[in-house]
Image 1 (cartoon, one colour):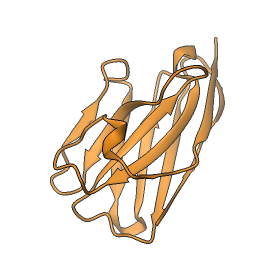
Image 2 (cartoon, one colour; image 1 turned 30 degrees about the vertical axis):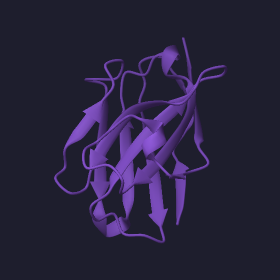
Image 3 (cartoon, helix red, strand yellow; image 1 turned 90 degrees about the vertical axis):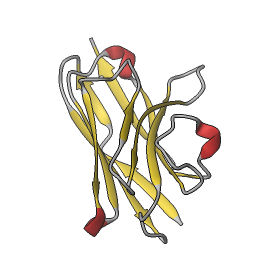
Length: 124
């Protein structure tokens, strides 16, 4: 099983980015896939998750209304559309997956397969 993130980069405050996570070696059926981010000196925090079983989602308060998570089953890909980016969004973004959770959860301990991350830098 492998997860490969892409789409990170450097943008100005207020701009948008779309992150993608291609998952190989396992189907997305009955899984929860999440996006986490880790800023320098901080622990990874869950910002958005989606259940492929029923499409239910979770968003952290800090990103509600600005981010949208989606699944493309045909491509085994999870995307994260990020709008109105702020310098506080600068971090390494990781996707992770689990079948141990029945609902979307931002708890990193529930996820056992992680990608390598993609850097997002937002300048003021």
